[in-house]
Amino acid sequence: MYYIAGLALPVSSTQAVEGLVVFTTFRFFQHGISRTRAIAPVAEAEAGAIRMMPTNFIGKAVTPVHGLAAFIPPVTYMLSVAVNRFIQPSWMQRMSLPDNYMNQETKLALRVAACASTFVLLRFMERTFMHLGNQWHYIGVWIFLTLMNQ
Image (tube, rainbow, N blue to C red; front, side, top):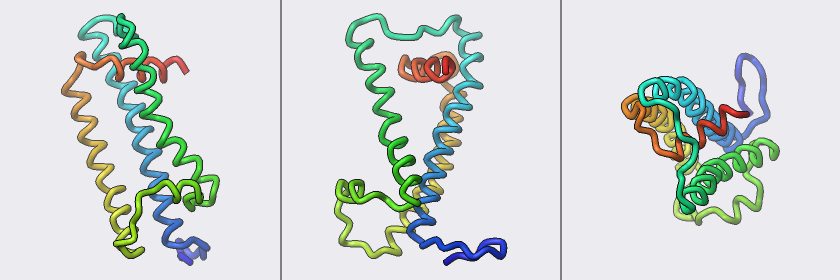
């Protein structure tokens, strides 16, 4: 049980860490989308109209699959854990890698460290987008245009 601002919250340490992971994953996507929306007009102004898709067959087939593959696993994780009261569902636990060599506290500490390092990665990603400017790859452009059309 945790006490936050005088409230007794019936949350285990595992649930708290899962909540942190869900928040971090959501923040990563939110930051990426907002920065892409901010930088895309600059790239378009520098290089002209942004092409939506590659012109060859392989590019047209691979680009949407790659974009979906980048979104489906994290979104599935966030929704499944949030709906299951911030506990990984049993089907998700069965598919995870074995971790018998670590105790629970070490696993939780590593997950918290990974969440903290995600915010460092967000800054790196922001600087990368700024540096690339108009030299985006098709996949980034396709994801941007898909999100802008929603």
